[in-house]
Every structure is written in C-alpha cells, then in structure tokens.
Image 1 (cartoon, rainbow, N blue to C red):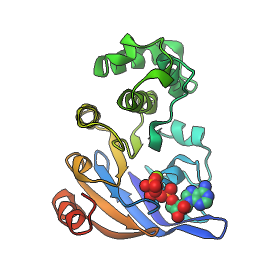
Image 2: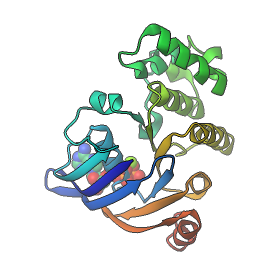
Image 3: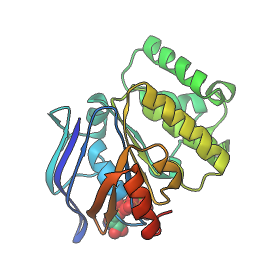
Image 4: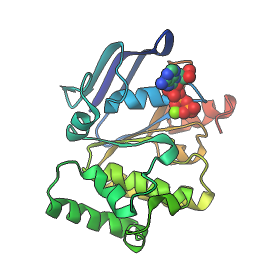
Length: 230
Ligand SMILES: Nc1ncnc2c1ncn2[C@@H]1O[C@H](COP(=O)(O)OP(=O)(O)OP(=O)(O)O)[C@@H](O)[C@H]1O
Ligand SMILES: [Mg+2]
C-alpha cells in the first residue's frame, strides 16, 4: 500500500533522513519509534508533502506521491494529524474539523462530521467553541477528526499521545481501534512506545535519521525496553 524507498531528507546541510525504506500493507498499523530528533516527523511530513525529499521514492497504491503538494497528497488518500496537535485556536471546533474537508460537497462533509460526532460526542457538544479553549486531549481529538474528514486510506498520526493524560490516551486508542476496524491503514510515530505498541501490528525503530530495527509488536516491545523507549 505505502512503499518508501531510500528516502533522503536534508535541511540545508543537515541530513535528517538517510536511505529510509519502509513498507506498509493495506490495513496494517505501523509504529515508528524514535527519540527527539530521530527523524519521525521528517518521514511523516515527506509522505504528506510538507517536506520535499532530496532523494528516494514514495508510492501510495502504486502512485507516486513525491513532489506532490499536501492538498494533492490528501486527495490521493493521505490523512495527517500533526505533532503538537495543531489546531486553529481562534476557529471553532466545527470549523477546525471541516477545514480537513478540502473541496468535498457540504452534504458529504456534513455526513462525515455526523459519524465523527458519534465517535467523539465532544465534536457536537463543543462545535461552536474556539478550539484554543480545549484541553490538550480534546485538541488531539480535533486534530484527529480533521485528518479523518477526507476518509483517508492512509492515516498519519505524528505523536498523538505526547503529553496526554492516561484517560485521553485511552480514549484516543479506542478511536484508533475504531478506525482500524474500518480498514484504514495507519502510520503512527511515538517516542514513548508503550500505549502505541498496543495498537500497532509492527513497527520500525528510527535513530539518527536511519531505520535501525524493524519487527512485530512483541519484538519491538523487547527492543524498546532495551533501548529505553518505554
Ligand atoms: N525545518 C527544519 N530545519 C532544520 N532542521 C530541521 C528542521 N526540521 C527538523 N530538523 C532536524 O532534522 C532532524 C530530524 O527532526 P524531526 O523533527 O524529523 O525529528 P522527530 O523524530 O520528529 O523529533 P521529535 O520527537 O522531537 O518530534 C533533527 O536533527 C532536527 O533538528
Ligand atoms: Mg517530530
């Protein structure tokens, strides 16, 4: 479904990703584990078109994504929830989520908002409230819902649990499970792997811009323990 081969990302003279290759099959949830500065966001941003790689290939269902703009990647089926759960603070919860709808018809976007509201009642209860007034966990739900507006075939979640209280981690985990049941393919990143490992089928350990290990969830749990990612 997603094939990344020999991806290279540089910022000026700094090399952030070196020959990164990963493959994700349809329906899989794959975890990218790595410390601060390992290159997790650089990889995720390359897939959604926010970062322009210096080399390598990115293909989604056989279609080239490299060189496409973020809106074109979104139309090609990629949903993206950024790290730090960026919301438009002054905009209402409803408008934040609907900002993910791109050029969808109003009827279609109302329909999707409807099912998202069943998943997260807060989206209806606080629809008109400025998103900047929400707690961190609630803002993560808004970012998550915005990423789902286009019904993506591949969902990118960049550190969705960072800084959240256990109750929000468990709510967001439940939502991820619901998305998994619907067949969505997921790539998520985390530094602290424990809650994310409960959701992932397998994953990769990234360090210094290179993939150092890959394995199934059990293998990664052991590795992560050794390398202090838990
Ligand atoms: N816009 C940028 N300009 C220059 N260097 C950057 C930029 N973005 C990232 N880097 C550098 O690239 C490397 C990888 O950063 P990246 O943000 O991908 O890591 P990360 O794994 O997402 O880290 P974190 O867990 O802190 O989010 C780091 O050395 C970082 O300093
Ligand atoms: Mg990051």
